[in-house]
Amino acid sequence: MIEKKTATEIRLNKLLAERGLTSRRGADKMIAEGFVTVNGKKVYELGIKVNPHADAIVVDGVPLRGKNQNLYIMFHKPKNVITSMSDPLGRTTVADYMTAVPGRVFPIGRLDWDSEGLIIMTNDGEFANRVMHPKSEVTKTYHVKLEGQPRPDQIEKLYKGVSIPGGGKVKAKLVEKIKMAKSREQKTSDKYDWYKIIITEGKNHQVREMFKKIGFDVIKLQRVAIGKLKLGQLERGELVYLNDAAVERIFIQDLPNDTYIKKADRKINDENQVEARDEKPVKRLNPRIEKAAAAKKIKKKELAHVTKKNFYRELNKKTVTK
Image (cartoon, rainbow, N blue to C red):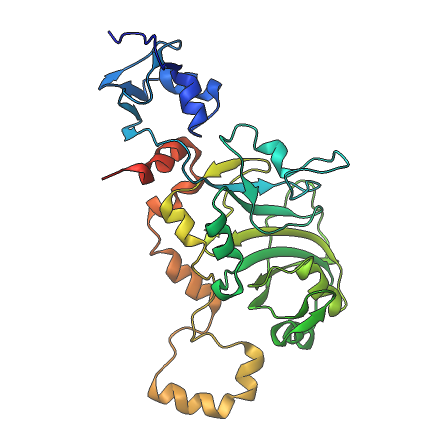
């Protein structure tokens, strides 16, 4: 039987919550289900106290991570939430969803109040600078709902670049029409169309202003990926801690490979492309085929950041010290 501590001790559920694994209630459930061991023995007593400096605490087979370590969090920002840690008018901010996170974190970049989707929260300033720096060219993928369909020449303007207020000239890396799964709220209509757009800049209201420049108002906007880190099945208002593998996916551009040629460019360079293909054939020109092929190579463990069941296990994997 494990002795209760009397000096420098702390309740086990509180310690797990402070280290960012879960809430205290969630920690109680983990303890009761036998996921936690102290000094090699499973503990089931909810009131047990431990010495974080002396006791060997393991959660689901992984040593408990240390204090004051960098945190990387993927958050699904709901609509009508401000991307800020405070608001003088008392409106809802992303900080209101971070109450269970140990220590202070902040959002990387911005997402409009009336938009929703993926935001990265962290306490690592250097990491945030790396993500935001123009040289990193981190791709951001959005799904946008438009009233009507842009013509090919209008889409081409987005590729070539448009000037937006306060942002200068900005370009799209990819624009394509997509089909969205219908929800109960959606009605059958030819009035609205969904498009995917990928950009590397992060100007204020950039996507909305880009479509406005070609004559279209964005009715709905959702950020679904940063790099190759996907929003996945994360629900609105939910967050999950990222492991090292998930963090590195942020810096992998989610773009078709160099052999992809936009339709508008194919007509212009048709004669030159015939000669080039004779020398070095292009196997795939369809970005959807390219993405499907790439998806087969993704290992299951690289998608662990969207699996709620074992997020605490993935969070701790990067804490092994030599």
